[in-house]
Structure formats: C-alpha cells, structure tokens
Image (cartoon, rainbow, N blue to C red; front, side, top):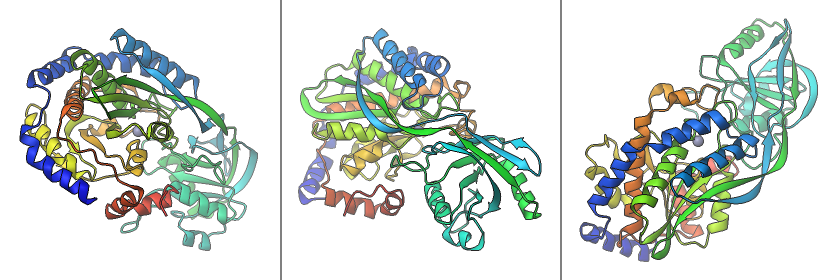
Length: 468
Ligand SMILES: [Zn+2]
C-alpha cells in the first residue's frame, strides 16, 4: 500500500459514520422488489430449459445471450454485446472404450483443449497421482495413464494441467483422471488456461469405472483401451453482455458474473445463480436507483470456464475506465457476509452493511481472503479491488459441480431474492458513498500483494504469473 493510499484509508475510516449513502427507504424498496418480483427465477428457467448448458462459442451460448437480452428488455434494461475472439474448444463425439478384457464404453468427458486425434489403442498403466516420481516407477511410454484425483494428506494436489504435462513428458498417449466423487459423475475442466491444445488427450472418468480399472491393474490383468477424440481447438467468437448505468462521476463499479457454463448440464448453479442474481440487481437498480454518483456497469462475462476469457477481455478493453471496485458472483447462494478479498479499505463499509442487514443470516460477517480462478482474477492482476459476497449453498446444490446434474431443479428461489437484495444494496452503496478511496495497485504493488496473500505459487503453476 502506498503512503497516499494509507492516508486515504485513514481519512476514510474516520469518516464512515457521516458518509453520504443511499437512503434506507431506497434500500427497503430494493429489498422489497427482489422478493416481490423475483424475475430472475423465470429468466433462469428459460436460460436452463430453452438454451441449456452455455459453452462459450456454442449455439446454446448465443441463444442464451439472446434470451437474457430479451428478458432484460422486458424490464426496460438495455444491454449491449462486446464481442471478442478467443482460442476456443468444441466438444465432439469422443469415446473412451475398454476393449480388453471385455468391451465397454466408459462414461468420460474430455478436458477442454483436448484436440482431435485419430482412434488409437494402447495398454493402460497406473500412475498414482501423476507426480513426477510416479512416472519414474511406471512404464508410461506409449501407454494410457490412469491417475486418481484423491489428494495426498499434507501435499498439495496437482493441477490436471500439471499431470498432463508430466504424462506427456513420460511419453504417455493419454491421461484418464478418476473423479474423486462417487455417484457416476465426471468432473469437467480445462487441460490448461492458455488456450493451447493439450499435449495429450485427457479425460475425466467416473469413480466407479476408475475403481474397476484399478482393480484390474492391481491383479495384473492387461487392460487395452481405445480412445477417439473428435473434440477440437479452434478460434471462436463470443461476447460479454454489458449494461451501463451512467453516474455523475467517471469512476465505475463493475458488478459481474460469468454467463457461460459447462455443456454437459444446464449450468443453473454454475453460474446460472450469479447470472440470475446479476439480472435482478440490474433490474432493481435501473428501476429504483437510476441516478448514482459513480457509474455502474453490469457485466455477464463469457468463457470463464474456459479460462476467464471474458473477464480478461473486459479488463483489457476497459483498463482506462477508472474501475473503482469489481464485485464477482460465482455460484453465489444465500448471503452470509462479504469477502473483502484483501482490500482493507473496503472493510468498514462491508462490516457496516453486514451488521445493518439483520434480517439476513449474515453469520460469516466480513472476511478478507483473496482467491483465484474466477472472473475477479483479471481485475486483481490489474491492481483493481475486487470483492465477492459470501453465499451459502446446500450440499445437494454443489454435489453435481461441473457435471450433468447441474440443472434448474436445484435452484432455490429464495436464495436468489436474498442475494439480489444484498448485492443491490452493496452496489448502490459502492456507487454513492462519497468517502470511498480510489485504490489502484501498481504492477509492483500487485505482485507484492499477491505474494503476501500466498497466491503467487498457484498463479505460477497455472502459467498466469504476469509479473517479473
Ligand atoms: Zn463458475
């Protein structure tokens, strides 16, 4: 923190009690509207049922954008598409098949950026968790490698991109990751976040079929597999959906959520929830708080699942917009508090809001633990303060994460109203408080800040450390 920022923070701390804020009547109207109208629930039903899973660059994603724009228009909210190109990936008719000791087509999903490969056959070999030493003891050359995703106590689990790299380095032809969740589920994910074709094909397979393969290998029964990859990497065009509520000042509050989802389910939880809450917040603020000090921009980011592409493009395109604060909602549930994400200057306001909304179960209060790998990351890396509401989801809502079962049936109407209420109030306070300092970290300050919060290692492993 520079000394100038420190001074501003102190001034801010001294003045929070007297700061101009929206009147409580406006807040009450906003909360009332979130519960009485609940338009986001109907919008999310359309998105889930008519469009379905919204993979970036897919016809379903484009249809979903049209539905969202149409529903916003019904409430007089105009939004525009900001188009961009990204290294895309299209899922094809892939097949992971055991051909010996008997024939069986497995339930498997290719990891993103697994690229088209003619059908090939190879023996299967067990490579434990895929650490470099695991490949010293197994003969992976020319074979398909089977690894578990169960983590080892006291040791950080590898990213799947790291395992793929180790396997390819050992001459393996493909990697099968056994999901660590039971119940016939796979776990969609990316082979990397840079947009490069994965070095070798990689798939997530179910826990149950993974155990079957493990038992066969344990008993030294030769397992022969055949893999076909028709998925492919190709540049795709996509868009963020952006809607601006112009304020008196140039400083801007960005309220965002990723709109895209994995293709195998309906994406109603990840991130239909954030998409729908943002819809209601935009609707409510347009109707009840159209004039604000700071500009508010509502952004539905695209391509988060494929590597935060939409948020990266947005930050690139709007770097000079004086973004004051970004709020990110990803799988946001019933509000429990706020995460200031290492932005100390926002703590007093967040505490005041958490304390002031007693009808909500704000039991977690305000924490400050920055994390990576969602759309706030590009903002963080650009030195822009980013925060997120803390939400609660029931166990059954997250169990089907990144798989077939992420469907509209899981959505709780009440959670949407609660979250929209809290985020609408938060947004209007951020947009109208006269006393909130404008804090931007320089590149060197950002690097220090990330190191202090122990996020540098992870970013380096993912190939996303943009400093030094
Ligand atoms: Zn998500």
